[in-house]
Length: 404
Image 1 (cartoon, rainbow, N blue to C red):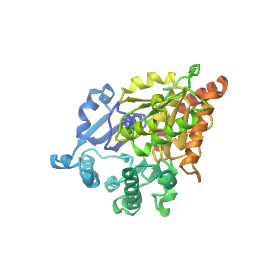
Image 2: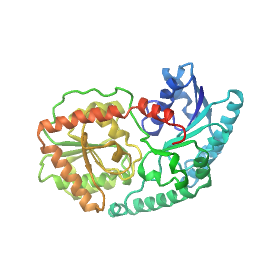
Image 3: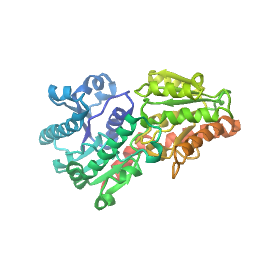
Image 4: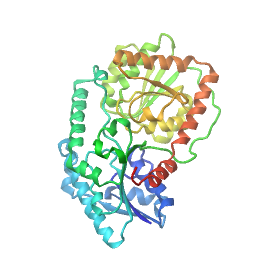
């Protein structure tokens, strides 16, 4: 069998959406004689530098838009048009290759967002979409303390979700698909009821098979919490800092380390100073991925209060390191997490103050629970991460890829 993967984002060792495209390509090989991956020409040097790309059954088709479009891509107003133009050009490149070496099946892998839809259904062969996302929204009651810029951004996102539901490109892709996978329950709402019967919810991110091993590690003596990710308003690091301030009375000496950079850093520094926890919040900046991973053994828990993260690779990687996680019950982390590997803070009917208190109580619980209870969560974290592997995810898509 010869399959085609449409994967705009596909690069090894980059994490995030690039990792989704790369891992899906690698893990499709056991299920096909030949795997062809259609991706950006910009990705070619990184892909070809990786020895795994030289598998004789793995082939890459590289395509990019002309230089003028790449230059305009930097303009926010042009992004939607850029993505749409890329999908059209990618379809034409796929059609040319299909005439030379006919494909038996095509998968839309990335973009994980459905913003630009997909035209691969026009190839006239069985077509599978996803897992895709894009329907996740920050609850209105948790936007109160966002900056004006953050609130405006969320409003624009809300409008974008509405457009996605109505987009003829997205709707035609859903109509053509044999099977649709969405990453979260929120994104299920993007799919019109008439196509729900062929739609399933399936997390878009995973880990390599057997990546995590259960290792007995003691909980750090001092309560040390960590966040990993970009410092953006919707990552809700401001809620984590407020929770640290609220928890500090019960757990004196508690700290929060932030790995990552972003436009909200200055505001977060001001907030930490205003709440009297500036000395307890460390802005570690952008640190190499392996260095972050190696440091996780020194923390009590990952605090990940993201408001609309469709995946949550940072959550998976923390779990695989045996680090319990504190998260909200939203988006991808809401699917990944359960009571065996950390604490999930409910946001149902909760306002910001209640959510902050929930996070603070979770931090206090992590810091004060018996060592045996923390070690149980650490073991549960590893077990949960091993349940969410690329092998299992790919197998499920391939074997259930027909009509639901």
